[in-house]
Image 1 (cartoon, rainbow, N blue to C red):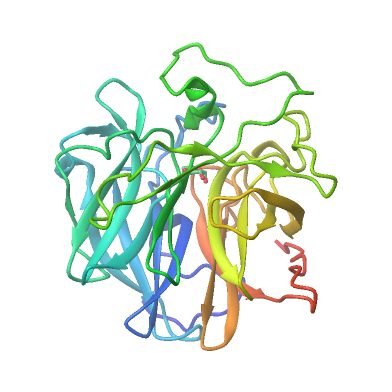
Image 2: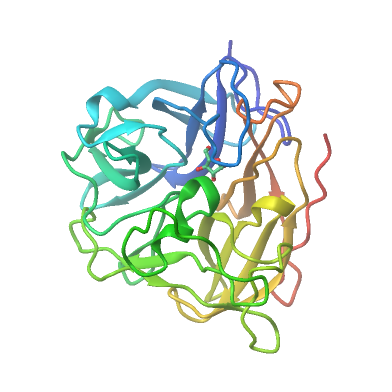
Length: 326
Ligand code: FUB
């Protein structure tokens, strides 16, 4: 049933959706969410409860129009390298092609990042036979800069396995740094023009405080956890992300797409449900935050719903904090 969209209400209620990556393609808003399944799962720190199997793409003609579910855009069964858990995706447009980027566990249980292509922003997408060589962990976000260069940001702690990649190789028992040591940063890699491969070995991004000191691993109100997003505003690069265990969406600003970035503040206070995950998009001269919460399911961590709200800047370019209302 289609109903008009309103701020802070689920975009769709016939399925659970999460981890929204919003883009303007062909004059419309397209949202690339995870598709949470309506099954009972016990939550654990490994994220086993997020056991998703496919993606649906949503679109909106404008922010008051009903959100349209375009149906199954890609299913696990059609991804040769993947075994389970299709987590937070993103999409990009280049070369007259739409690219869907998505994390999933490979047949060894290691999270990798894959890509699938379509001529249509709503899909269906056809997966490449292998994951992106050199990719690992979760939550890809692809940003195409004004000069046409494309960058992938990715990585997530705990279930997202980023702690296991500190040496550049997968270390099965790899653990996070001491609380006083610099936090593990998200990764960034420029993409080749084909948008299917990395041009370089992924690098760790540096996030520092106003004094230039690295944010530490024990600083859970500010350290990177998962869900990176990149947007550009007035020539500055805004890296925003989830703090995971403290459940905030926060941001840091830099002069270059690969950083370093200086921590600035909170964009969204904790939502109902353990995870928080967002994207930021400009549409018809306004800026919007797409996010999710677990209100529709009454608080089930693994049954989330995508919503949006307007995002506003202060004159100095800082972002006004959005107080979550259940
Ligand atoms: O949806 C599964 C995982 O939960 C995502 O990849 C994370 O960002 C968190 O939202």
